[in-house]
Image (cartoon, rainbow, N blue to C red; front, side, top):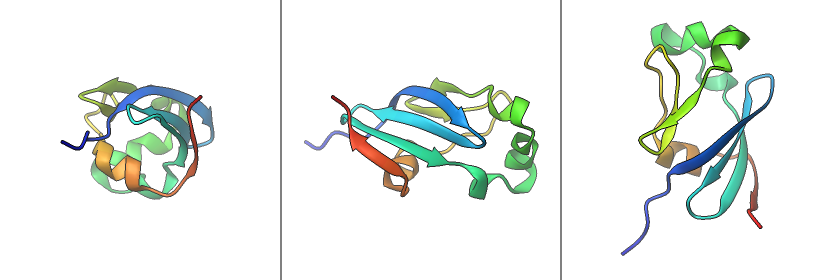
Length: 84
């Protein structure tokens, strides 16, 4: 059975970039700026609000209720590498 990817670590990098470590061993830095539109994500353009992310349910979330499916994050192009 194939393991579904989920986020196990997240670290703020800069701007709207967060480095994510997935349970598959893939570490990826993703620029979230293109998602910051619409009523749920627009408030995260405030960098102070953006930096308040946390991990819940295997993905990255924010206190205002915003989240992005871990499969979407995993398939998103970013700077990625295998974790050592």
